[in-house]
Length: 74
Length: 279
Image 1 (tube, each protein chain N blue to C red):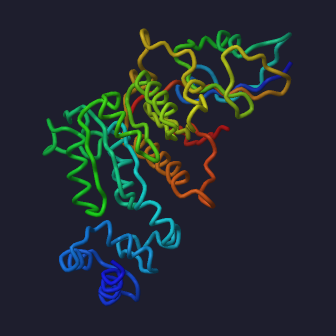
Image 2 (cartoon, each protein chain N blue to C red; image 1 turned 180 degrees about the horizontal axis):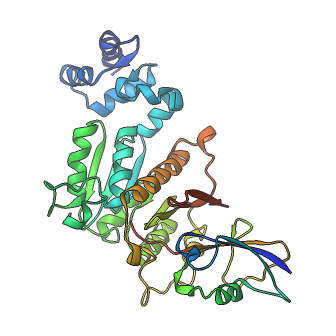
Image 3 (cartoon, rainbow over the protein chains, first blue to last red; image 1 turned 60 degrees about the vertical axis):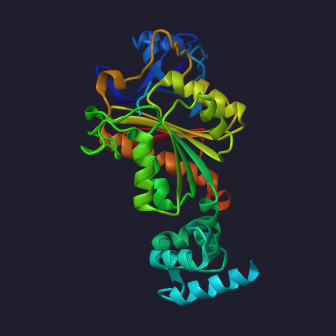
């Protein structure tokens, strides 16, 4: 199964900006975050095809998953 | 009153420049002569096909009806630091007539890198008080009500309840989520904004939409009260851009109609640069 992962801001450091990933079986957003060693506490907005999703959403073939760091300053 | 109205309109028409633009000096003379407030004068100007000279360059965008709508709006800016100072500045220049500015803090030196109202002269002073003074200097038509207390104080909640729109310009995620809960209870639209380093985000949060909970899902106030700004700090350009996007979203809500075209939100990265919107 192929899904596109997009990383933003500091998440790109040592990783990538956009990557098409191939997975053997089912995969959830939570597993993607673990695989990329992104701590959950650092994640803010999480989108699948431009819409907010939960951290444990199952991804489908062709999905585009965007991961943004949490920002809270003013 | 009709006789006063007619006389006042005639007075303003006589004072107009470039056909129908009314300068501030005419407000001052009219206020003296007719014992009316600047706000009442501006309302009469906008209701009678005239236009305030100060808003000349936004006339084609808003027209008299939109400008009147802004004049009669009551908007809260919660937090008057980086985001709040710039949001406030834009709102007074746009002509939003009634502003509630809430911030229990005073200016400190480390605010100077990005907070519009922080100057060497205002260090140690309450941020909301400084905003009131700034408002009077830039646009005397605008009523600015400062509150040097938490938005969660009895007075804060009471004042927020009468607003048409609330801007989130806080610097704590815990407080943001509490503000979103309060706005949902009070049935108020919240414009959310937050920054960290070169990045930031903005979202329109209708009451009971639950959007803030999705933006900050799995947030645990006891262990994590911040985002990347704790490590990377806050910068003037990011604060400026996010404040501007918040105001654009707010205008979309206040003006409605053809202006009501803001999608739910977006994330920006000024380093690349890029803007990703979401729905």
